[in-house]
Image (cartoon, rainbow, N blue to C red; front, side, top):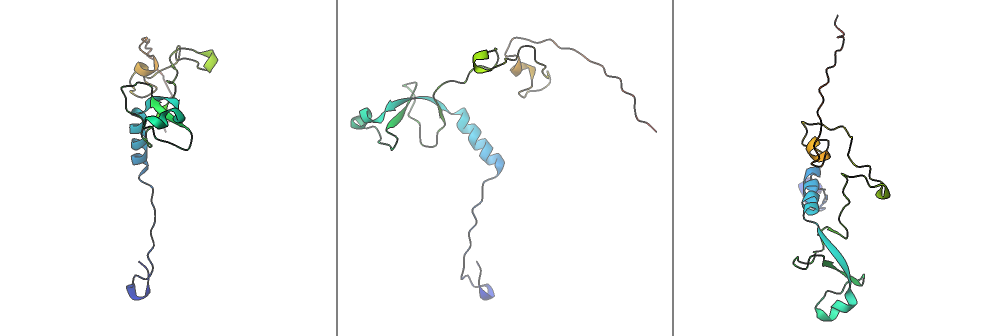
Length: 133
């Protein structure tokens, strides 16, 4: 509120974005719950209770046992390609021969990067001269 002597003659509202972590967690939840869909012509579905939309098509679940996606659901048409094996046609190099971190549980970790193929460990000792005074 703003005004003379503390009166509330003018109100000011600020719109704020949520915390970045909250936005990221929300997107991750939607990503994890994304469903595969296929396009269906809305014209043929209108008479059967299908919703009319401005794009003249409807998204139907790829799996008929799943419910149709909502307006805020994430959807996809084709599964993502595998990145474990080389696929020159798609420009995927594969992960064979790459260096991984056997103590990491992240994307650089051997369990994830080696795609269950196994890996060899190598211990390296590095001797450095100290800059002592």
